[in-house]
Length: 394
Ligand SMILES: Nc1nc2c(ncn2[C@@H]2O[C@H](COP(=O)(O)OP(=O)(O)O)[C@@H](O)[C@H]2O)c(=O)[nH]1
Ligand SMILES: *[C@@H]1O[C@H](CO)[C@@H](O)[C@H](O)[C@H]1NC(C)=O
Ligand SMILES: *[C@@H]1O[C@H](CO)[C@@H](O)[C@H](O)[C@H]1NC(C)=O
Image (cartoon, rainbow, N blue to C red; front, side, top):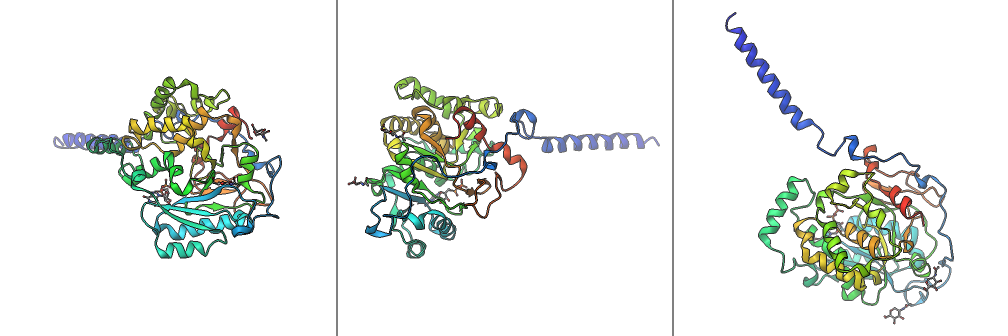
C-alpha cells in the first residue's frame, strides 16, 4: 500500500482546495446578510393604522374640474412621465390606475417626455386612456447629451469599477443621462415653463386607493414643496463621492442651509452603518423618486440650481451612478424646511418590488401594511423609520 498514501494525500489536498474554493464563492459578501449590515429594530408600520385623508382644507372634485376649459379650478400642474415608445403597455397600465383612482375626477394634463419622438401609436393609445389633455415632448439635445466636460476614457474606466462593485446599469449611458435629466433638467423644458407642480409617474406602477381631493391644491394650500410615498436605502457604491461633494458645496454656500432642515435624517449612521461608511457620511436614505409630487419652484430656486451645477461639474452622474433620488433627497434635506415635505401615506402605490399600502377602505388590490413584493429581507431597505424619527409623519 505504498502508493496509497500519496494518493490519499492528494485526494485530501484536492478536497481541501475545493472546500476553500466553494467557501470563497459562497461566503456572504461583506456587508450583506451579516447582522452588522442592519441594526434596525422591528418597528410597527404606521400603515397598519387606519389612514384617512390629510388634515386641513381639501378641494373636492365636485366643482370646476371638468375636462377642457370647464376645468377652472385646476392650477398650473401636470402629471409627467419620461417614457420610451417601447414602454407603451406599461404606461397605459399606470395611466389606467391613476385615472381610475384620481385623475378621472380632476383631469390634470399628462405631459410625456422622450429623447426621441413619440410614435403615432403611442400618442393615439395614451390619448384614448384619459379625458384630460395629453402633451408629447421631445427632450432638447442640450438637456440629454453627455456634457462636454465628461471625459470618455475616464467614463469607461469608471464603468469598470462600478461593474466590479455590481452597480446595476453602470454601462448604460442612457441610464446615466436619465438620472441627470431627472435631477436637474426636466423642469427646464420649455413645455413646463408655465407649470409649477408635477406628479411623476413611471410605466408599470400601480395605484390602489381612491383619492378624492386635488393633491396639487393640497400642496399649494398647505405650503408643501415635496410629497413622497416610499423611502429606501441606496446602493452606497453608486454614490461614494456624492456626500463629500455636497459637503464641499455647503462649505462654499452655508447660506443655503435651511434652519429647519432634516439633516439628521441624511446623516443617521446607526441603522445601516456600512452604508453610511461606504457613502462617506450619508445614510443613503432617499425618497424613492419614481413617485414624486412636487413644486418645481424649489428646483428652479438659486440653491438647487447652484447645487445641481456643482454636482454636474463634479461628474458623478457619469463617473459614478448618482441617481436623481439621492440628489433630490439631499437637496430637500439640507435646503428646505422639513415641514414642507409630506408623506402621502394615503396614496397606495407600488413600483416593483416595493409598496405603500395604507389601511383604508379606499384601497383595493394591495395588502395593508405590505412593504415588499418579495422576500422579507427586502424590509431592511425601508428607511421610513428614520424619517418618522427625525421629522415625523406629517
Ligand atoms: N424616453 C426614455 N425614457 C427612459 C430612458 N431611460 C429611462 N427612461 C424612463 O425612466 C424610467 C426608469 O428607467 P429604467 O431603466 O426602467 O430604470 P429602473 O426603473 O431604475 O429599473 C423607465 O421606466 C423609462 O420610462 C431613455 O433613455 N429614454
Ligand atoms: C398659470 O400660469 C400662467 C402663465 O404663467 C398664468 O398666467 C396663470 O395665471 C397661472 N394660473 C394659475 C391658476 O395660477
Ligand atoms: C402658507 O404660507 C403662507 C405665506 O407664508 C401663510 O400665510 C399661510 O398661513 C401658510 N399656510 C399654511 C397652511 O401653513
